[in-house]
Length: 369
Ligand code: HMG
Ligand code: MG
Image 1 (cartoon, rainbow, N blue to C red):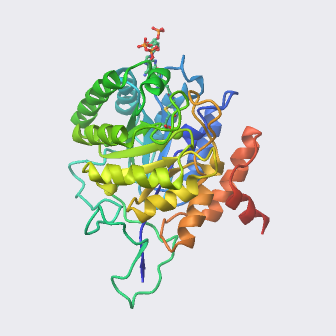
Image 2: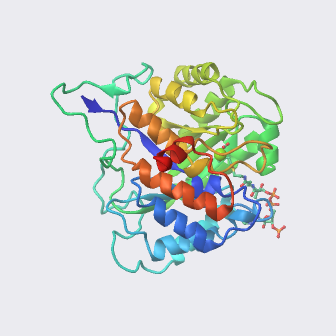
Image 3: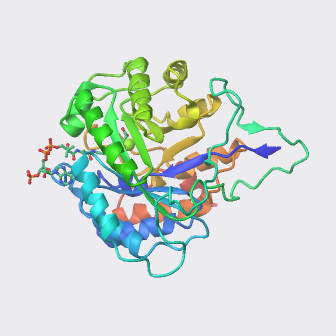
């Protein structure tokens, strides 16, 4: 029985830290990223190039980028470091940092674009399935004689060298779009188009977020799934490589998540092109992740120690804790390549550094053993 691969995108250094009230020193952010780079995660959201007037905590993201490019954390496999970009100005700042960075010190493989012309293409980490609209089993039985694989065995990677990538973001409600970026949805999509076009001209992989997909702090819990599907499809159409569908407020329930995923698939969106980004405000994130798995989603965002929240979504807590997500996935027989014990130690460390509660139940339980 061959375990199904599930990709975990660690968003702690960005989503996890952006809402912290006291300024976090650059060295703490770098240390967090370095430690996470040793856990087996392949994707780490490392910072954002947003207006410091709106989110002061992310102001030192250029320092993060510069350090990652100059001194790539050593890791046995390549990692994609991602930066959140709200507008062309943010992308220009990111590009200036990327292009102006000094050569990496030494090993490991230097950071470069994932579409480096010298790099032979490799398959994406999420496995292909026969029908994306069919709920897929979490484990497949392609070869019944094969031994169960180690959940920590490294996943295949879509990149062969470290990469820096970007994420753009928009929202499924006008009120949230306005609150988060001072733009209507239509204006925000225009900005996204310009970002994709410039990023693609530089061979940079682009993720996209659709916020408030399962509830909005201003317009309430009933966000139209058809609106989320329409925006997701337009992001994919403009060339975004993967859309992370976000439950910003944690208002999602299993039924709402199911309805949303069915609507996305009915609108022609493949579950292999989406991720789920689940904030755990109401304790539903893991349940909703399992619903996502049953519908074929194989990429999930999470945050070490459950850090985080959105400054423009009052009361929303952090993403599902990476420790909890990985523990759940391994319990279902999936393979993540992530060493949950290592993540648990980092969760305890960063919670202490920030002087806050560790929000990972699995992390605390693992360390108490
Ligand atoms: P604005 O005020 O409409 O834009 O903000 P502006 O163009 O008038 O700029 C205002 C000032 O910011 C100007 O400075 C600009 O130069 C500067 P001034 O002239 O007054 O000195 N500025 C910038 N500085 C640095 N980098 C930039 C940049 N852009 C403008 N990129 C804007 C519009 C989009 C910039 C602003 O609304 C913004 O930065 N919003 C981002 C808010 C944010 O970061 N939210 C949290 C991240 S999203 C999230 O957490 C959700 C997610 O996790 C998924 C989920 O859970 O839902 C992804
Ligand atoms: Mg978020």
